[in-house]
Length: 212
Image 1 (cartoon, rainbow, N blue to C red):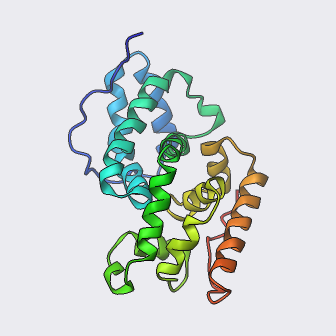
Image 2 (cartoon, rainbow, N blue to C red; image 1 turned 90 degrees about the vertical axis):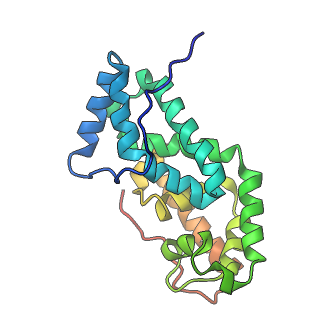
Image 3 (cartoon, one colour; image 1 turned 180 degrees about the vertical axis):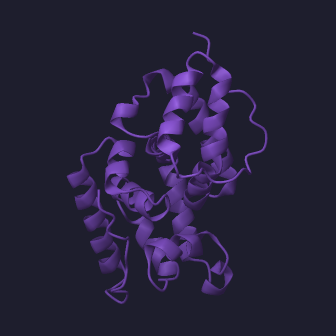
């Protein structure tokens, strides 16, 4: 069966999507793209930078190029199955990206462990700082990278969708096909395990309790 590919949207360095009215606009673009495939370029332009950034923070820039491209190819192929009544486009895209990242879970684990072995002074502007900026208040250094590597994949996915993608509990549930209560329990467990891994030395460890 032939696969359709989205039109070439040009540079991926466009601006972040406008939050105002974005859900309705995204849904309309998806519906329109079913009869006018070129309309899918709107989804690409609005969300590629954010999806690429999320993948880069988890796997590194090189892998993120492939993950982001595959995310939008998959979304284009599956656009006929997108149901706006079940959620917005943004968590749907993050869900696709997270599943693709899951195929690289060993790479992600190795990446965090390599960061944990990297001297702190070499991490000032790197991946670990970007994670730490959202996951901790004050920074846990390389210890955080090692602790993240030790989390079960499902718990880590929930934690990082909240911390890096800034999704609500409800949006994380839409992205991963989970009930909101399951999202909350996984996030609570992930935060507790990180605290334990860090020896209780960072009691301010947070992922903001975003209401569903």
